[in-house]
Length: 166
Image (cartoon, rainbow, N blue to C red; front, side, top):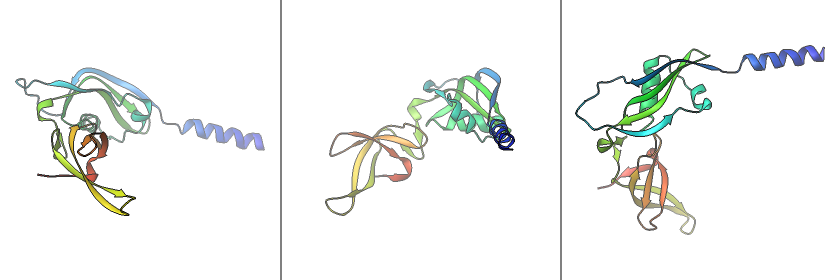
């Protein structure tokens, strides 16, 4: 009886694993119009390139998968060298190189060069203090790199934790 239960658990474990299959490969793909006058550059490469990222995709359509991949990079406009996958649970995923206009790169209202502030808990003062810095790079759709004004160090900060100052 133990062997039957163990066997059925193993079969259930292996059949519940999420898998994916490549269904297409294209040179360029976009959901919006591309302006031929603008000078587009590669902003990031191999987005969604790991198996874990592909399996986490929750895009119900190919268009949603393209949009999720392009929007994961601030300033992204279209994908080059893209691969399209179908994930076993009925979702789609797209991986590729994100291209965009680096001059107009902004995300959530922030752009490189903006002066921002954020709150930090100070142990010495036993209260919150505000730090000030300048955005040096838009790292992803969740974080940016900020050069701290008083120390000169560059740190990662989430967009939700910073505020733009004048």
